[in-house]
Picture 1 (tube, rainbow, N blue to C red):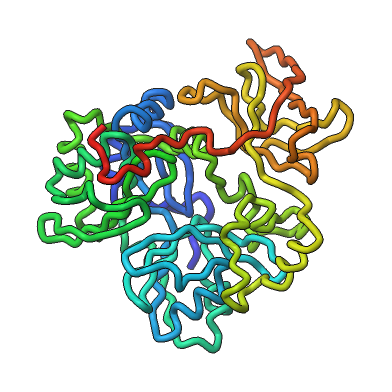
Picture 2: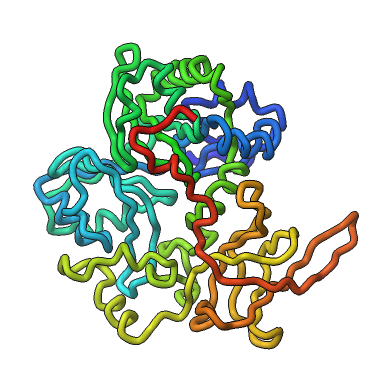
Length: 395
């Protein structure tokens, strides 16, 4: 029997006992049915831990699917827009998948463990879509979300923390590569991946060893400035990196009731993930038509005058025509700029158009409005060399 709404329980991650004890701000949010920390102490402290030291984030609510079988790679090439055959074992790749109209359903990461052994990680749940797409293929698809605990360790001292943990040779792990270690008799997966645009790693372990991993990391990072971070600080870092987020830069395709609100890979600046040479995949015909006729929108970075974030602002051309809308915005402490990601109608994303943001902000209960000039720029506002360094440095 289903519980009454007031009896419904929010799930706890395997790290909840540790995160709850440290959440002094008592700021929480919900992610995939799990309660997760939004702010531990202050957003500023957690953000600067990402950029200047090491920050630890609970990734466990991420949806995870194990995909295996004789046709696993063929199935993923049918599902995804990129050519999965180019992703070698031991590597991690970013990917999107579309509906028949070429509109993005979701994005995520693909971990390739062997010729026909993969894991697909995403924000939203997609098992029915995956199973329908897999009809006719010899492939098994299993939701393993509750059997894998995950942490993101991000920041310039993250490699030093892992070396202090005893992970010998981890500094030689290349960006978007993965490997395995033993942690007190438990298998620990480590990938050089993350959502901050900085040097960082993601760690995967069985839930029974989750608290042990947390404690060992906090002790190993004690002299390297480690601190836990919540989703608010992570949101700042991912905007600076120019990364898109589901249901912010695009609406997850399986949730939409208004198809015209969806976005294609080309409209999200992800055309580089579309490989027409690999053969048939879901949405291919629609994307070929779009390539020939042009896209409706373009996702761009904006450099905006002033220091008031253009949150949810409309973007205008020449103060007359609406050109688009801001999807994410912030004052960037690292770039020292007022930045935003925006979805603009084509061709307003091209150089030569005079754009301005209609910015509203509040000062002591009084709302004010300014027209802030803005310019289209590279949306990778923060992309430090240490993110790509080989071997990874200690700071």
